[in-house]
Length: 171
Image (cartoon, rainbow, N blue to C red; front, side, top):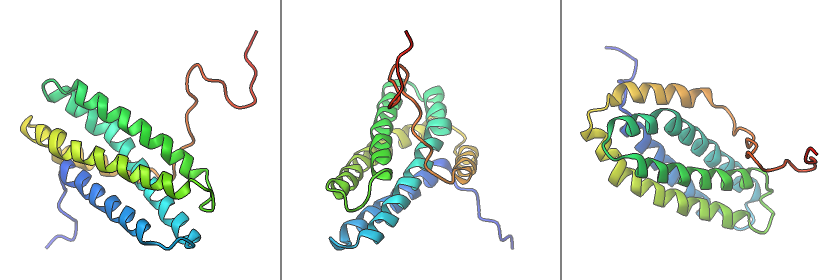
């Protein structure tokens, strides 16, 4: 009998990510008010897992859905915007200290964003991807490989047209 795991399709893999992150948010909520070190460690883990998931979805899953699902543009665009909001909160949480006033609130709001996003993906995008006949096993392998490459939350990319802190506009 083979010891290698059977390749999972992209939808199963992404749903598993959703379930794991949801469980981590629940665990975070159950930590005491003064559990600063535990909160920071768990928040960082949540942020890293969400980052891996979002990057893999944006680079691999969303383009496949956009290409193979009829009228998917609005759905994929909305999911991409939701990712941008989540990434912004992730960057804020990542740069904060758990003693900061809004730390818990930002983690909670991130959880609410993700909850909304997960519902839409699981109720709308995933069923349509299955119906469209996308090779979900091949996509699942690509997604897992991409997630395995990501070991940290990347620094925020510069926003075109926005000056970096301390830089001066060219005259």
